[in-house]
Every structure is written in structure tokens, then in C-alpha cells.
Length: 232
Image (cartoon, rainbow, N blue to C red; front, side, top):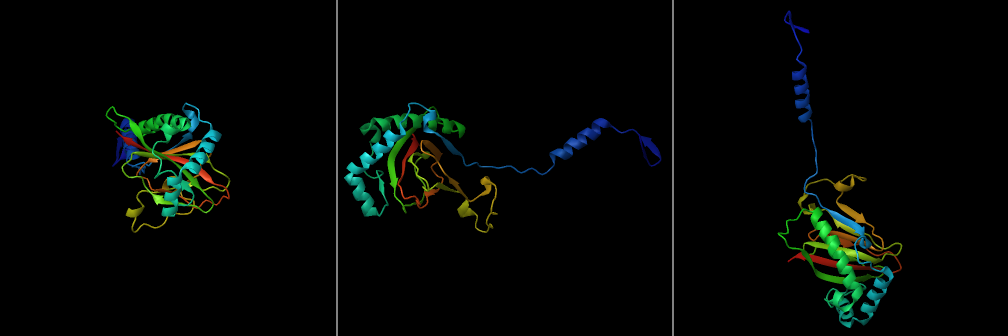
């Protein structure tokens, strides 16, 4: 009992509890929206198994024989080698690349499920797959992959000192008056994220996500296989 204006009034425990809950509901609440997802797994998590050394040797063998690709790289000032502009049928030419694609299909399907895409009964299908060989001092400048849905890379050779993958906050161009983030800010609050994959890893992201490969500081070559998936 408590006294109000000379009268004694009983406390209502149910009312007090309801008021407490109402207060709790009105407390400040901050949550993250519009997530940018990054898929990181071992390629070997899905079959068929891919021998990393055989894949590395195959990449170099293809690069040696691809005169058109070498010419394109020289004309464009591209450091190292890429088959992007010269070979469109790696899975048909080389059985190990067919195995890579079979494994990638399963990884991409798992990522699409996580992204909660409504594919209307269809599947995401491989559009392009190409080899990248980046020498010491080589870079791959910031870019996106227009007209695709999922893009990614699996890593074939990552010597000590080889560059990480750099990912950029897709809202950067809209933060016109925003101050920079604090040093040591939480990962989800940073403007750039660096991911250091290992040989045999696969990284997937949505194709609109801007990314780049900073300068390769290793004396040895950084070798990877990149790809795009579209909605057919």
C-alpha cells in the first residue's frame, strides 16, 4: 500500500509490470539494414575434388599457349596475364576446369539461398570464367561486374606477401559530408574491407560490389580464377 493525498492506495503489480515492459520497448534500438554479404569457403567443401597443384600447372600451361591473350594484355597494358578477353571455353578445353565449375555451381547455389533470391524456379548459371596471373608490382584496379548477379574468385597460388582482395562500401559515393570512420572501427562500419584468402579458398559476392586487387608485393606470382554467374 502507498499513501496518495492522505488516502491509502494499493499498488497494482500487473500494471507496474506492463508499464515496465512498455518502457523497455521504447528504449533506443539500433540495427543494421541492407546487408552486404560475402561468402568465404574452401572450394573442396563441394565435390568434385580439385587438385590445387594440377590447377596451378594448368593455368600456367594455358597462359603459355594463349598468344591472343598475351597480345591483349600487352596492348591493354595489363600486368601479367589474363584469359578474360581470349578464352571463353576453359571448362570445355580442360577437364579440371569442368570440375572447378561443378564445385562452383554448388557454392553459388548455397550463396543464392543465403541471399534469399527468388529465382522463380531457375538457376544461376556460369557466364564467364578466366585465369589471372599477377606478377610482382601488378594491380587490378577498382571495378564491378555489370550484367551479372554473383561474381567471385578461387585462389590457385597465394605466395607470402600476395595482395588481399579489397572490397569497398557500396554507399561510398553517397556519403558526401560524412566524416571518416575511426581507426579500429567495427568491421561492418569500415569503408574498405581487406580479405586475405588462402590457396583453395573461394570468395563470392554480389556483382555490384566494387572491389580491387592492390599491388602484389610478393616476388612470386599471384594466381587466381575468377568468374561471373547470371540469372538465365
